[in-house]
Length: 356
Ligand code: GLV
Ligand code: MG
Image 1 (spheres, rainbow, N blue to C red):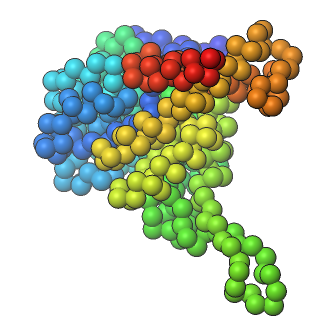
Image 2 (image 1 turned 180 degrees about the vertical axis):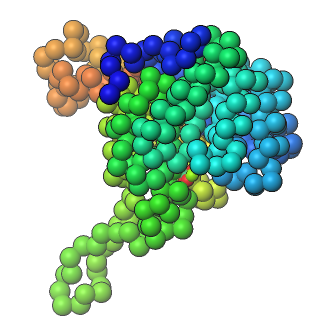
């Protein structure tokens, strides 16, 4: 057992002190790019201007014979690009792969000062985070880094889900967790071949109206990921880190993608992955509260004064608990508005109208 007193001590002599709080910078979309693809690499500066997080992917979707090119590509892109307020993340190869050791050594040594977060795939339990934690401390010390790298786990193994609370609390470096529905489906032997989203076979059906079992029975498709997302959100909140929905593979189906993202948003996630530029706009729309909700939240906060007691607004009861719900929305809106003038204008306009 590790003493709580040691939790915030560096794990290697000369490594930077661990953070005590996870920065709440916007991360509505984690946009994936393949650094081995030169055409994609050329678009990075433009993408940086419209995304909260850009992630150089080294793991799945990068062919085995392109792994080294992807790693080297990420190093040169990171050195050559000014990312402004956009965070740079990477997804390294899995801990059992032949590439991950060189991924970590090269990236921390060469561009550790440019990287914000290292996403670790296929995390099975706290032991995986402990391994990465110590190794990063050693590499940071050697590279003379002043700021610790943060770690993000992908929840994509059945054992990871069983251990999600201990993963979330395994290190002060833990920044967040994303759902990885493709690997998770395979690990659990779920019978879906889709990358995220629902499945028409996973449904509920209303009772029969008479003797005919087939007619007049409404069915609703259910969300295959509800349980896991909700469990992940609780584990993240328990440990003060951030939950995310992962990939939605049907790029063409922007409607279902938006639904999946919104379900995650409503359940507490702060962002999702975007695998194609079209998904950047979807994530931006979904993970920014709507102006009318922000206006309502601000109105309730103003009416509730010191936040205690009860008031009626438009026939709806508000009290100490509902003002807290409103603060969640209003604080997120303020944080996003600080970076996005268009959103700020929309929030302020809606608030003025609501208060008029
Ligand atoms: C993501 O990595 C997934 O497996 O869904
Ligand atoms: Mg995966």
